[in-house]
Length: 186
Image (cartoon, rainbow, N blue to C red):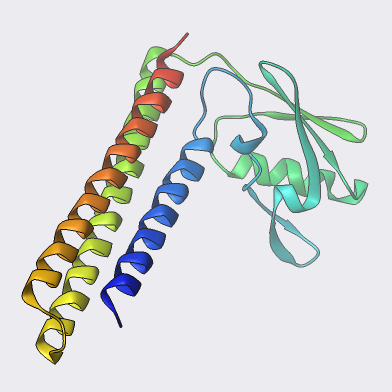
């Protein structure tokens, strides 16, 4: 594999890791209702486990309320049970063909717990980025050992990998700071 291919592949993997961290953040509750809060809740329907977003339309008609409208009315009870068993601290209330979820106010303690959860997610993301860096450096060293690539080229590529790593970790930290501010804003 050429140096350019290694660098390109490493950058792609680091960007995917960053996207994954951001998507995980979207599932952490802030002060206002967001459909992403429950869209990945697993519901037992049709003999298997499915994501809620595959079974219903989720909307936020008000800042503190979520509305779930199942595509198939027979799944209402299963969806309600799935939301309750997800341990999100939410109490769904069925009203005919809809399920309403009123979000309770977040206490200061609960906000701090959510911040801790986000910090853990971001640290997992940083670890994943560092693993990508390690794999890239190993691939570069393997290329050096196989011959055909100069030491200067390898050193330049290693510096580029470190630069990519630093940039990605910085962006993850920025996403964390933004999410933390969002959670702590009352």
